[in-house]
Image (tube, rainbow, N blue to C red; front, side):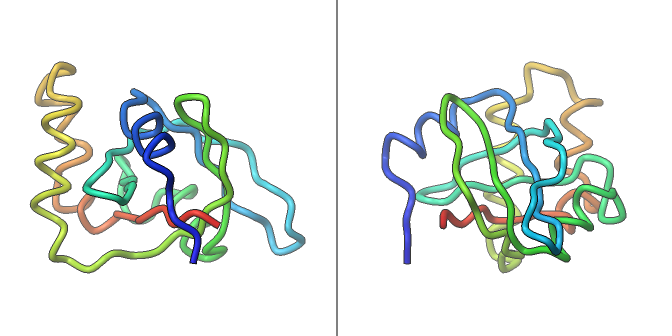
Length: 124
C-alpha cells in the first residue's frame, strides 16, 4: 500500500485550500473543486461544507478514486469513508486550522452534516 511521504503530508496539510477531482467511469478526471482539508497524524481528510448531498462529494463517493492538488503536491488518491472514531479529532483540526475565518464559516466544516460528509484521502 502506498503512503504519504512526510513532505507531502506537510505540504498538503499546511495548504489553506485543496483542489479535488473525482474520476468518471471512463477514467478521466472531473473538474477540480476547491475545498478545505486537514491532516490528522499520517492521514489527510476532507469534508463537504455543503453536506452529504453536495454533488462533488457524491461523485467522490461513487467513484472512490480521484486526484488532489495542494501545496505544490499533485497525487492520485482513493476516497475512503473513515471510522467515526476520528470525528472529534478532525473537528478539532478544522478549528485549529481555520478558526481565523470565523465561526460561521468554520461551522460549515464541523457541523453534524459535514462530519457525516468526511473522506480520508489515501495515496495511490
